[in-house]
Image (cartoon, each protein chain N blue to C red):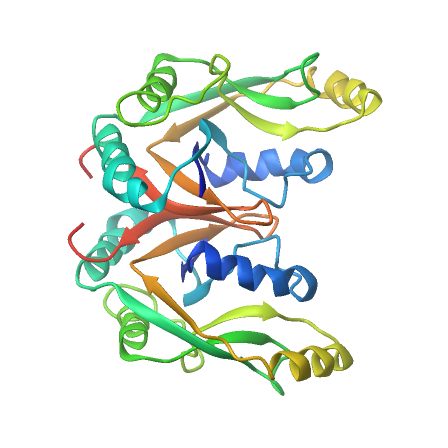
Amino acid sequence: MKYGIAIFPSKKVQDEANSYRKRYDPHYALIPPHITLKEPFEADEQKLESEIVPELENIAKGITPFNVEITKVSSFSPVTNTIYLKINPTEPIIKLNEKLRDGTLPDNQEYSFVPHITIAQKLSDEEFSDVYGSLSMDSFNIVDKVDRFQLLYQLENGAWSVYETFRFGDQ
Amino acid sequence: MKYGIAIFPSKKVQDEANSYRKRYDPHYALIPPHITLKEPFEADEQKLESEIVPELENIAKGITPFNVEITKVSSFSPVTNTIYLKINPTEPIIKLNEKLRDGTLPDNQEYSFVPHITIAQKLSDEEFSDVYGSLSMDSFNIVDKVDRFQLLYQLENGAWSVYETFRFGDQ
């Protein structure tokens, strides 16, 4: 089964991201707006329960809730035409990503971690220029509290379903 | 904010349900296949954290994982043209629904509890006759383990995002 780990921001931020995703992101219907913490990885269900879930519980317990800040959009151009809400790469989220590559967890990350919420992808070059040209002028002033992450699995249709929530701290 | 409580069945059952939902359910993109345990209710976030989440944790702790069985489809016709995978109304799921209407939780259930996974809805009368005529001949032999439920909230676009998972037992 294919699993992934993500943070879902608050409803307010999800609603804002969806206002763009609806028009510009073909993955709009597959998963709510999210910050990917760990790229999709394969695991069998037994190993998931015996090793991965306990490890994720341990990691979550050791984390204090933190804020993420969004002040602008950015893009992965010219690699891809993806546009995203840029999460300022502060220490807590960088450390969390590192912890999710340690221990018994698969380290399947190919590129350096760029925390973000995708709002547009798979645009044509022309669409990309238009949309990014317009959005990159906007400034955002979003501060959002993060106090949990979620383990998800992918269905055959490409959509993601939540397997479990991991709250930070000894809650 | 509007919240709901649901069970997501295993990937296998979700994939099977989605093979119908894709064609026949306009809510296909809003939420994965699910068994609604508690109809949507309004709550403010403070009350949710101080009262509802602790109550749900307590309820989940007191439950032993159980199986649900699906042997056929059924429908809410003539009330609505909804077609669903019928969950045999065994004691554990009936009791769980009752617990979710007790204590500090809002009792907002208008009809008796019919556990089900919707696979088609908002069909025209003609479509309904065709689809139900065909599906009601099929027999299913699904046994699925339930060991958690999920608290969700609804986004402005109608889609549902998971707030938290509650595992059964002292896990």
